[in-house]
Length: 286
Image (cartoon, rainbow, N blue to C red; front, top):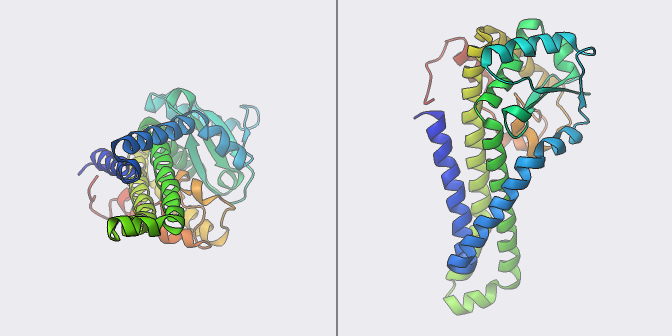
Protein backbone atom coordinates (compact mmCIF):
# COMPACT_ATOMS: atom_id res chain seq x y z
CA UNK A 1 0.00 0.00 0.00
CA UNK A 2 1.41 3.41 -0.94
CA UNK A 3 2.15 6.04 1.69
CA UNK A 4 -0.41 8.39 0.08
CA UNK A 5 -3.22 5.81 0.29
CA UNK A 6 -2.22 4.87 3.83
CA UNK A 7 -2.25 8.55 4.88
CA UNK A 8 -5.70 9.09 3.34
CA UNK A 9 -7.10 6.09 5.22
CA UNK A 10 -5.58 7.23 8.52
CA UNK A 11 -6.94 10.78 8.11
CA UNK A 12 -10.36 9.30 7.34
CA UNK A 13 -10.18 7.25 10.56
CA UNK A 14 -9.32 10.40 12.55
CA UNK A 15 -12.32 12.16 11.01
CA UNK A 16 -14.53 9.19 11.85
CA UNK A 17 -13.39 9.26 15.50
CA UNK A 18 -14.29 12.97 15.74
CA UNK A 19 -17.70 12.27 14.21
CA UNK A 20 -18.27 9.36 16.59
CA UNK A 21 -17.48 11.54 19.61
CA UNK A 22 -19.77 14.29 18.29
CA UNK A 23 -22.57 11.79 17.66
CA UNK A 24 -22.17 10.36 21.16
CA UNK A 25 -22.58 13.80 22.73
CA UNK A 26 -25.35 15.20 20.54
CA UNK A 27 -26.52 12.81 17.84
CA UNK A 28 -26.40 14.07 14.26
CA UNK A 29 -26.26 17.70 15.37
CA UNK A 30 -23.34 16.93 17.67
CA UNK A 31 -21.55 15.18 14.81
CA UNK A 32 -21.87 18.28 12.62
CA UNK A 33 -20.67 20.55 15.45
CA UNK A 34 -17.64 18.28 16.04
CA UNK A 35 -16.72 18.46 12.34
CA UNK A 36 -17.06 22.26 12.34
CA UNK A 37 -14.90 22.39 15.47
CA UNK A 38 -12.18 20.26 13.81
CA UNK A 39 -12.40 22.38 10.65
CA UNK A 40 -11.94 25.59 12.64
CA UNK A 41 -8.85 24.16 14.34
CA UNK A 42 -7.44 23.12 10.95
CA UNK A 43 -8.07 26.60 9.55
CA UNK A 44 -6.15 28.18 12.43
CA UNK A 45 -3.32 25.66 12.07
CA UNK A 46 -3.14 26.22 8.29
CA UNK A 47 -2.66 29.98 8.62
CA UNK A 48 -0.72 30.44 11.86
CA UNK A 49 1.13 27.25 12.90
CA UNK A 50 4.36 28.21 11.10
CA UNK A 51 4.66 31.55 12.90
CA UNK A 52 3.92 29.94 16.27
CA UNK A 53 6.54 27.20 15.84
CA UNK A 54 9.27 29.56 14.62
CA UNK A 55 8.67 31.87 17.58
CA UNK A 56 8.63 28.89 19.95
CA UNK A 57 12.20 27.98 18.92
CA UNK A 58 13.45 31.60 18.68
CA UNK A 59 14.31 30.99 15.02
CA UNK A 60 15.76 33.97 13.14
CA UNK A 61 15.49 34.46 9.39
CA UNK A 62 18.89 34.09 7.74
CA UNK A 63 19.94 36.48 5.00
CA UNK A 64 22.03 35.42 2.03
CA UNK A 65 24.93 37.47 3.41
CA UNK A 66 24.76 35.68 6.76
CA UNK A 67 24.45 32.14 5.36
CA UNK A 68 25.74 32.06 1.76
CA UNK A 69 26.49 28.30 1.74
CA UNK A 70 23.02 27.49 3.06
CA UNK A 71 21.41 29.62 0.36
CA UNK A 72 23.59 28.06 -2.33
CA UNK A 73 22.62 24.52 -1.34
CA UNK A 74 18.90 25.30 -1.07
CA UNK A 75 18.82 27.24 -4.36
CA UNK A 76 20.42 24.30 -6.15
CA UNK A 77 17.93 21.85 -4.61
CA UNK A 78 14.78 23.88 -5.34
CA UNK A 79 15.90 24.19 -8.96
CA UNK A 80 16.10 20.38 -9.20
CA UNK A 81 12.81 19.91 -7.33
CA UNK A 82 10.89 22.55 -9.28
CA UNK A 83 9.99 24.42 -6.09
CA UNK A 84 9.97 28.14 -5.21
CA UNK A 85 12.74 29.36 -2.89
CA UNK A 86 11.62 28.99 0.75
CA UNK A 87 12.47 31.36 3.57
CA UNK A 88 15.43 30.09 5.57
CA UNK A 89 15.61 30.29 9.36
CA UNK A 90 18.31 29.33 11.87
CA UNK A 91 17.45 27.98 15.34
CA UNK A 92 19.91 28.84 18.14
CA UNK A 93 20.57 25.26 19.30
CA UNK A 94 23.74 23.19 19.34
CA UNK A 95 21.76 19.99 18.67
CA UNK A 96 21.73 19.22 14.93
CA UNK A 97 18.18 19.08 13.56
CA UNK A 98 15.87 20.70 11.02
CA UNK A 99 12.22 21.07 10.06
CA UNK A 100 10.03 22.56 7.35
CA UNK A 101 6.81 24.47 7.86
CA UNK A 102 4.48 26.81 5.99
CA UNK A 103 1.02 26.36 4.51
CA UNK A 104 2.11 25.59 0.92
CA UNK A 105 5.23 25.56 -1.31
CA UNK A 106 4.81 29.28 -2.04
CA UNK A 107 4.94 30.10 1.69
CA UNK A 108 7.38 27.41 2.83
CA UNK A 109 9.98 27.83 5.55
CA UNK A 110 12.99 25.60 6.20
CA UNK A 111 14.62 25.93 9.60
CA UNK A 112 17.95 24.40 10.62
CA UNK A 113 19.83 24.55 13.90
CA UNK A 114 23.27 26.07 14.41
CA UNK A 115 24.42 22.59 15.37
CA UNK A 116 23.41 21.12 12.01
CA UNK A 117 25.46 23.71 10.10
CA UNK A 118 28.49 23.21 12.37
CA UNK A 119 28.52 19.42 12.65
CA UNK A 120 27.55 18.27 9.14
CA UNK A 121 29.55 18.30 5.93
CA UNK A 122 28.11 19.68 2.68
CA UNK A 123 26.72 16.33 1.43
CA UNK A 124 24.99 15.70 4.76
CA UNK A 125 23.51 19.22 4.93
CA UNK A 126 22.32 18.77 1.34
CA UNK A 127 20.66 15.46 2.27
CA UNK A 128 18.87 17.01 5.25
CA UNK A 129 17.68 20.03 3.27
CA UNK A 130 16.52 17.81 0.40
CA UNK A 131 14.49 15.78 2.92
CA UNK A 132 12.83 18.95 4.24
CA UNK A 133 12.11 20.21 0.73
CA UNK A 134 10.59 16.80 -0.03
CA UNK A 135 8.12 17.45 2.79
CA UNK A 136 7.24 20.73 1.07
CA UNK A 137 6.92 19.05 -2.34
CA UNK A 138 4.76 16.22 -0.95
CA UNK A 139 2.50 18.66 0.96
CA UNK A 140 3.40 16.89 4.20
CA UNK A 141 3.28 20.11 6.19
CA UNK A 142 -0.43 20.52 5.50
CA UNK A 143 -1.11 16.82 6.13
CA UNK A 144 0.85 16.89 9.39
CA UNK A 145 -0.92 20.04 10.57
CA UNK A 146 -4.33 18.52 9.82
CA UNK A 147 -3.43 15.28 11.63
CA UNK A 148 -2.06 17.18 14.64
CA UNK A 149 -5.07 19.48 14.97
CA UNK A 150 -7.56 16.64 14.50
CA UNK A 151 -5.75 14.59 17.12
CA UNK A 152 -5.76 17.68 19.36
CA UNK A 153 -9.51 18.09 18.83
CA UNK A 154 -10.10 14.44 19.77
CA UNK A 155 -8.01 14.83 22.92
CA UNK A 156 -9.91 17.99 23.89
CA UNK A 157 -13.28 16.27 23.33
CA UNK A 158 -12.04 13.24 25.27
CA UNK A 159 -11.09 15.54 28.15
CA UNK A 160 -14.64 16.91 28.10
CA UNK A 161 -15.88 13.31 28.22
CA UNK A 162 -13.76 12.64 31.31
CA UNK A 163 -15.28 15.61 33.15
CA UNK A 164 -18.73 14.55 31.99
CA UNK A 165 -18.11 11.07 33.37
CA UNK A 166 -17.02 12.53 36.70
CA UNK A 167 -19.83 15.04 37.15
CA UNK A 168 -22.65 13.73 34.98
CA UNK A 169 -21.82 10.10 34.43
CA UNK A 170 -23.94 8.70 37.25
CA UNK A 171 -27.16 10.22 35.93
CA UNK A 172 -26.39 8.76 32.50
CA UNK A 173 -25.73 5.48 34.22
CA UNK A 174 -29.21 5.49 35.79
CA UNK A 175 -30.96 6.50 32.57
CA UNK A 176 -29.20 4.14 30.19
CA UNK A 177 -28.45 1.08 32.27
CA UNK A 178 -24.74 1.81 32.49
CA UNK A 179 -24.11 2.08 28.74
CA UNK A 180 -23.80 5.88 28.82
CA UNK A 181 -21.26 5.89 31.63
CA UNK A 182 -19.25 3.07 30.07
CA UNK A 183 -19.31 4.89 26.73
CA UNK A 184 -17.93 8.02 28.37
CA UNK A 185 -15.12 6.07 30.01
CA UNK A 186 -14.24 4.30 26.75
CA UNK A 187 -14.22 7.62 24.92
CA UNK A 188 -12.15 9.36 27.58
CA UNK A 189 -9.49 6.63 27.61
CA UNK A 190 -9.47 4.98 24.20
CA UNK A 191 -10.13 7.94 21.87
CA UNK A 192 -7.02 10.01 22.74
CA UNK A 193 -4.76 6.93 22.58
CA UNK A 194 -6.21 5.99 19.19
CA UNK A 195 -5.76 9.57 17.94
CA UNK A 196 -2.13 9.64 19.06
CA UNK A 197 -1.35 6.27 17.43
CA UNK A 198 -3.00 7.33 14.14
CA UNK A 199 -1.17 10.68 14.13
CA UNK A 200 2.14 8.88 14.71
CA UNK A 201 1.42 6.39 11.92
CA UNK A 202 0.76 9.28 9.52
CA UNK A 203 3.98 11.01 10.56
CA UNK A 204 6.11 7.85 10.17
CA UNK A 205 4.62 7.16 6.75
CA UNK A 206 5.44 10.68 5.54
CA UNK A 207 9.03 10.44 6.88
CA UNK A 208 9.76 7.38 4.74
CA UNK A 209 8.32 9.15 1.70
CA UNK A 210 10.36 12.30 2.39
CA UNK A 211 13.55 10.22 2.70
CA UNK A 212 12.84 8.67 -0.70
CA UNK A 213 11.83 11.91 -2.44
CA UNK A 214 14.69 13.82 -0.80
CA UNK A 215 17.22 11.29 -2.08
CA UNK A 216 15.86 11.76 -5.60
CA UNK A 217 16.12 15.55 -5.32
CA UNK A 218 19.68 15.43 -3.94
CA UNK A 219 20.60 12.56 -6.28
CA UNK A 220 22.66 11.10 -3.43
CA UNK A 221 20.96 8.90 -0.79
CA UNK A 222 24.27 8.43 1.06
CA UNK A 223 24.35 12.09 2.10
CA UNK A 224 21.05 11.80 3.97
CA UNK A 225 21.97 8.34 5.33
CA UNK A 226 25.21 9.70 6.77
CA UNK A 227 23.39 12.72 8.20
CA UNK A 228 20.80 10.47 9.88
CA UNK A 229 23.59 8.50 11.57
CA UNK A 230 25.01 11.71 13.06
CA UNK A 231 21.58 13.09 13.92
CA UNK A 232 20.65 9.89 15.76
CA UNK A 233 23.87 9.91 17.78
CA UNK A 234 23.65 13.58 18.74
CA UNK A 235 19.93 13.43 19.64
CA UNK A 236 20.84 10.87 22.31
CA UNK A 237 23.95 12.68 23.61
CA UNK A 238 22.59 16.21 23.27
CA UNK A 239 18.77 16.12 23.33
CA UNK A 240 17.05 19.29 22.21
CA UNK A 241 14.83 21.40 24.44
CA UNK A 242 11.76 20.76 22.28
CA UNK A 243 8.02 20.81 22.82
CA UNK A 244 6.53 17.28 22.42
CA UNK A 245 3.65 18.71 20.36
CA UNK A 246 6.13 19.77 17.64
CA UNK A 247 8.42 16.71 17.75
CA UNK A 248 6.85 15.26 14.59
CA UNK A 249 8.06 18.25 12.54
CA UNK A 250 11.79 17.58 12.92
CA UNK A 251 13.85 15.28 10.69
CA UNK A 252 14.68 13.13 13.75
CA UNK A 253 12.86 13.04 17.08
CA UNK A 254 14.38 15.89 19.16
CA UNK A 255 13.20 14.23 22.38
CA UNK A 256 15.18 11.04 21.83
CA UNK A 257 16.76 9.62 24.94
CA UNK A 258 15.14 11.86 27.52
CA UNK A 259 11.37 11.70 27.33
CA UNK A 260 8.58 9.19 27.83
CA UNK A 261 7.17 10.60 24.58
CA UNK A 262 9.73 8.45 22.76
CA UNK A 263 7.54 5.46 23.65
CA UNK A 264 5.07 6.99 21.19
CA UNK A 265 7.57 8.03 18.53
CA UNK A 266 6.44 10.08 15.58
CA UNK A 267 9.47 8.89 13.60
CA UNK A 268 10.45 5.50 12.14
CA UNK A 269 13.60 3.87 13.57
CA UNK A 270 16.66 5.72 12.27
CA UNK A 271 18.40 2.41 11.57
CA UNK A 272 15.61 1.33 9.25
CA UNK A 273 15.58 4.70 7.47
CA UNK A 274 19.35 4.43 6.89
CA UNK A 275 19.04 0.82 5.70
CA UNK A 276 16.34 1.79 3.19
CA UNK A 277 18.43 4.68 1.90
CA UNK A 278 21.47 2.47 1.44
CA UNK A 279 19.48 -0.32 -0.17
CA UNK A 280 20.26 -2.77 2.65
CA UNK A 281 16.60 -3.51 3.34
CA UNK A 282 13.73 -4.20 0.91
CA UNK A 283 11.11 -1.47 0.86
CA UNK A 284 8.05 -2.23 2.99
CA UNK A 285 4.74 -0.76 2.05
CA UNK A 286 5.38 2.61 0.46
